Image (cartoon, rainbow, N blue to C red; front, side):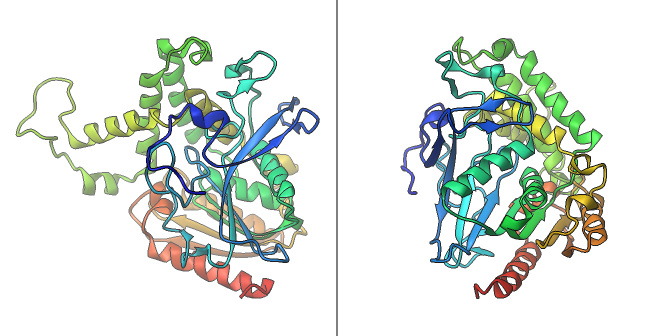
Length: 389
């Protein structure tokens, strides 16, 4: 879909987004891992390219923590290009001239898919913390319902990085007959204690903001902007490597010749983090941040299969390519190797690429020619087997 040149009001995107929407009535509830049915509910999504007559060329892109459905088009809130135009588009590794590409906002999000900022039909007010806690499995169930609604029996490929990679793994484990190829990037089969700790610091920053109001800030017409900005600042540090931070900022001062001997943003890195925090609060809902971080924390694919990750993939025909980055300390290569070992133990078809990069976890979103080459090679080879060349 095309987007207006004038950025939209973030709140307007929650229930009536600038994208396609699949709506499910109260008679079509989504059964959630929390043990409750959610209904009515909706899922917002974007599509690119053309679905072929056999409906065999569909590719699902799964977004990361603070991403959305606007993977390859102008974002209606920020007015900026989509978040993965380096990977998705005409002539890109996920080639929209060849494939029908779908990207949906995750359950619990704030860009049109039902989440804590959505209106609870029982009260006429935003759900806030009355919204049930979401899991990665719930997000994938919602996506599967969308794929059903689109009349697509199986996906040629599911692709995603970070939290998106978790969704790719969940798709392959839960719906193997519907996933021909899977490309999880910079991800893990379970969230580590360290990553849970980082998320908890961010959540506590939000909840400590007086304007959070016990999660009822939309009802009480306030916004916990300071807490959400701090949460974003802390998380953003984990997406970068020390080398990347030093190369970009070092100890350089920001628009001054000498320290001010104050708590102003003397250093460029301080100014950069403050900018990241402030710009983030303009497009993201604070409660959604709580929910999607919690979904990542709960993710443990082996636990769903008797404690054995190999059991999640045993006897399944999906072919995999796992990609990691040497400087990613948030989801280190050891996490990817654990997935590869499990796939090998399950006798699955798997390739693995560790890419030399000093850009940290965010490398999967940046210009990384080796990643593009690996992804293109895997997708092209799978397409030939699928008969899509």
